[in-house]
Image (cartoon, rainbow, N blue to C red; front, side, top):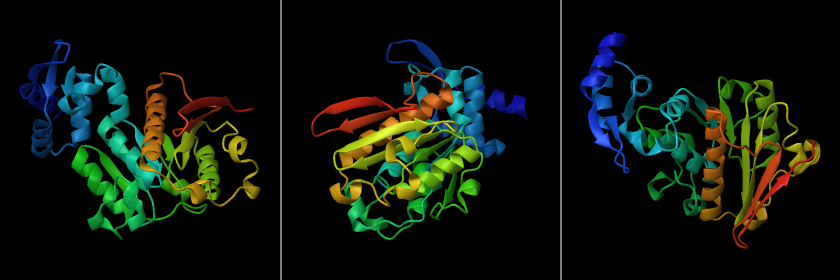
Length: 286
């Protein structure tokens, strides 16, 4: 079976050139889908096998001058949980699906409303009152049908958090309230999973990466028992460009964690103010 599948992959490859004219063996999206149907194998497994044998799935061709085949394979083998599928979460889901995260675990019990349309990538006029998790899985499957997607149309709380986040390589905090953020952080400690957390208010926001042994959110918000229910976004609103930027920064942290490369925002807080054009990294006290 494995040899037959590899033979099918090789048979369907085509020689192409990157923009710098270096050659590579390419496997197109439609050929991956055809092989998947013929062999009953997931597109994700086919893409992994192709990369491990020097064949580039064409959908990732523009990743290849930044990621190595091994690093792209690491993304395909990973599972990322996204908690909150609104402004941050919708953009994070979109980016990670396009980057090639192989398994997405998407969690949100909310439904779309009119006020989401200014910034939430997954929302459209015809999806008002649709569960956000339902819209998310449809969007991901439209972008990349090779990806495994699990969705949960429920809000994360103390009782269900560990079960919802099980087997995650990384979790992304895209929540809009501080209390649940602390629950999420505590659960990530319990299951030994890194957490990438961001918050947006108006045209500003911040992001940090928290490993299980780090003090994390307490260094930002103080004592969780005295933390406000809502952050500054409740009074400042949220505009689309700040949401999109912070979501992109979260995705960069997720990918660096999975690929074990680059410098993380661990024990640091990147603060962004797009009105004043300020980007500042603050070292968090330990």
